Length: 352
Image 1 (cartoon, helix red, strand yellow):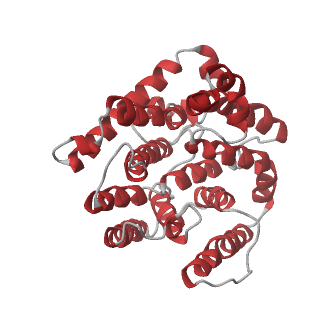
Image 2 (cartoon, rainbow, N blue to C red):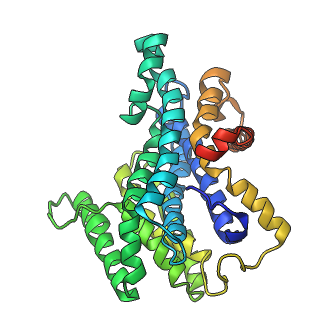
């Protein structure tokens, strides 16, 4: 999810895709919070169907972020050494976890630990995962950054067929087989320890490295068809086994790949020379730079609206319209807050 450092090297389509993924995550959490917290949002069966469908339709957001990481950092022109990963990438995410994770942990534990004890233990809670749930992505990102130099050594020297072979192997053993086991209550021990983030990172690299403008309509059709299928299945049964649409689900992976493919093709020139209005490119880049901070901070506004202001989609006569309005409010506040935080030099340099 981290952004490129210079607007002259940013693909306008990559910026647009990252912003789209950030909006998907906000929409997902806006609906997911209403779905799983009956103590603040009372919903009946029809309401649950609405929130569940909206939630699962946006599961492609995080995979797209991981694919962008692979496309940008595994680029052959990118200098990526273990030192660079540790000093630049890992350090920044660790600072984000310590700062935002500690703040969230303090709020979560002040009721049980007391103010002073919660404040002192907040950093420990943050690094041990006893903080806001959405920060799991930061821990995944740290793990990815730690192995990126090894992945880059492989992709820089591997033939296209080798990378494709690894992608298929990880997909089959890390996604397809576990899904079949869950669906049919099987126990086929045919898997590998590599997890879905590695698949998404390598897939992002592969689709960027071997851009292909063919089958774009097929990719669009595939993406919309998968979303339609997810929507129908969840609408029929909001309590459907959620693992079918986890991030290691083939359905989620294919939807993310189809969407990602819409933004990558031979028509996109090399970074720094890609087409697009300079004004639009500058505008998108400025919003693009806010996306990581928006990911970190947006739950503050969702929880604040739901728990403190008591403004939830259910407080509107038309709760569907209410969902959209709450989403827009959270989105606006998140981007504005992140823009203000980036005015603080240390925040801009070391965290956001």
